[in-house]
Image 1 (cartoon, chains in turn brown, purple):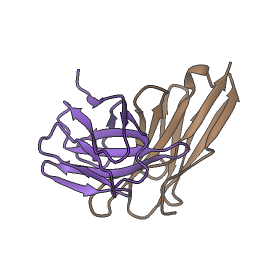
Image 2 (cartoon, each protein chain N blue to C red):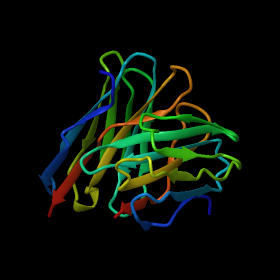
Image 3 (cartoon, rainbow over the protein chains, first blue to last red):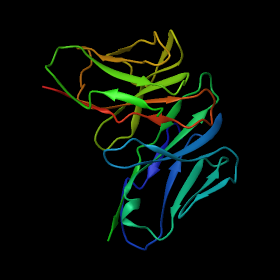
Image 4 (cartoon, rainbow over the protein chains, first blue to last red):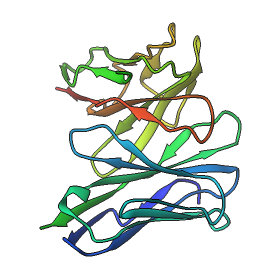
Amino acid sequence: ILNVEQSPQSLHVQEGDSTNFTCSFPSSNFYALHWYRWETAKSPEALFVMTLNGDEKKKGRISATLNTKEGYSYLYIKGSQPEDSATYLCASTTTSGTYKYIFGTGTRLKVLA
Amino acid sequence: DGGITQSPKYLFRKEGQNVTLSCEQNLNHDAMYWYRQDPGQGLRLIYYSHIVNDFQKGDIAEGYSVSREKKESFPLTVTSAQKNPTAFYLCASTNRGLVTEAFFGQGTRLTVV
């Protein structure tokens, strides 16, 4: 994998359903994986940053896991609520030369009441 | 309150004109970034700067120019050489370090007619 890829591109779920989506990233020179939540008309806000293989982070109903060997991270939302509707972005940072954030295309989540 | 400010929020320009987008931060961050988003695509890196008076091209720098004369400011000029300038432009800043959180402005939507 040369770029950061996210799937699915968009997702509709019913209120109360649990859901998850994927971020795939280059595993070579990997340093950190970031998740951001981007609500319409607002700026993206940081959710998690993870660096170690097997890392698991949790914030309320949202959690994330990291597999650096195979180059993927999952974001889970338990019991989705309409206020969870947003675009979820992941970004990787690498150690190759000067560092930079590389973002995925995002997963647009819509939670239906 | 510390933050990162982009202006203007909406910008209209005639084809062939250069236009400069403003990005200012008062977070004392060393690094600043410009991204572009097109419909259905993720954030693509245009330029980034890790220190004053130094900046690097990102993945899609052609047709753009930047300057970093002050730590707080990282203006982006969209030149007439940029073939498809109509897009949403997002500025971000971070402290140095690969695990540091990125802070974003609210974006500028540029429409060239």
